[in-house]
Image (cartoon, rainbow, N blue to C red):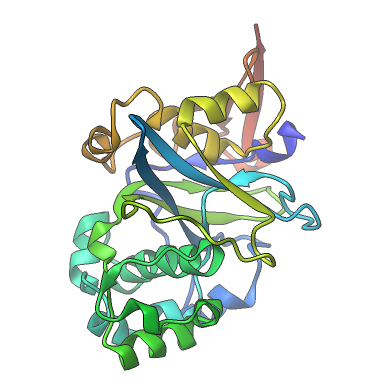
Length: 289
């Protein structure tokens, strides 16, 4: 199974590889098939409990043909409704501020990524943060980006998009059966908050530390794709949530650089981009031992 999930390259610079995936209608119209990667966003939810820094992992329904049964962070693909200009009235970040934070010139997509991460987390596990009467936003509102926007505006809710800390970006390379351009965020949940998984979206969810999740991966108890593994590796070893949030930045491996990700206790995969499409989008080299 691991070989199915190694066709990724990482771009944490956000300054390069920022090609526009198309107008918002095309965002919802495809599933990441073809040349252009489908934009997506995901969020790592943290909590402090009993001296431990834990994060929330969800299990994708095993019936799904794409990564069914995999452990992932809450998230999903951007919807045309995430690009709506009215989000500036229901978001702590403006489009301009979102673009500055992500170091991109695409203001519309920048704010859409923040909104999408929060909308998907609300839909999948019930997490929402912001100012105003949050209890007036129904879980079913998160199922549709347009309905979610209208519900926030009607209730006078301002989403706390300023609480999402950018944590990098993964882009699936050419040649993969499904391509995504995923923005990662990290945030801390309120004390006492517990997830309420949506059965249609999440088969299971649980709190764990980054180190424990990696141990479960190495033991074969969890299935993960390299973006999830790499994020866990970055988070492991930090003393607390403050340390994690302070350490995050938008610098990292460039779009032409190889990456190395541990798939298990004994196996590393090194993904090296090839210089031209004639030789393939990338070479996966497995190091055992």
